[in-house]
Image (cartoon, rainbow, N blue to C red):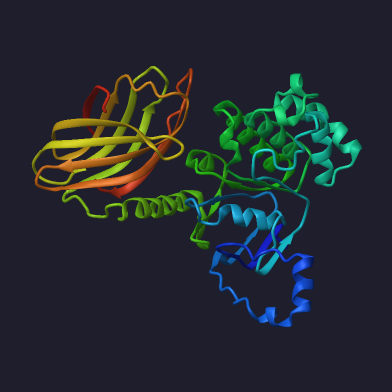
Length: 403
């Protein structure tokens, strides 16, 4: 049985809050030596401590792509800095088997006065590569980063996006066994983010490299990672497959932001079994399909459906509402078509709200993640949700009896 590439054992990291201890100059030491009473005049300061990480344990095998998710301040960046050996853990032990490359901040590892060409060789040397290895990959790096025109320009004159492109290109092409990627990719445009995700997927499948990926873009996390570590207040909440981990992350996020978790109250005699997007193309109607079941012996009237659309940063950008006159008994396909959404290409998520007169109100956040395509309709995908209960562009709806 092979040993894990990354092994974290009881990792904790403590920081001290408040002002740093005053700097002691040589003259202060001499003055105190001449007057020993001064050694006892200063009261000892008591500074508050803060645990950024507490008792972190996990292991990652070769070739795995692990998502690291959590709200701001959960400890994600601190954990990556510990793994990168930028900072040492207060307690615990990290075992790394292989060379590590990290993208934690824009321009990390670059010297601003050096040119892009010089920084490629500098960064490669920091990663433990020989000059011959770097030269062999140099053309691929420049082509991927799309900075050939500015290659002999000092990096200090690069935009943040150009720095990210070059830094990622170096880290991805110089073959480290372990790659740590923070939210730094969010600086790049959508096209480059997609390019980076494709490259990360390629190096894990073909080269067997291990990646830890931090992002608030749940669409990117779901497309790249098979499992995730969820952090909250410096502790691991769960380590699970990506779908379960994302749901736990969203539950924590909604709980922290609104003061309450998602609604768990069942709507009496009414079930939503599935939510699906059948059309998601810029300049065309956004069509959402719901499989719903009316478990009563009569039709249900005056049903209101609300579909909230969030961008990749989980900021609400649009709400689609529809008033359904009646749903007969039995199982039905409900299609809600929203005109003129004009969502630009990118990653989005959908939250669903539903209200039945005299029956109840249901709301479930982030039920479905999707990517808006610029030119052609992509293959529709389905997210099943058994027993899920449950200003505005112009909308229309259609009901089809299924049983």
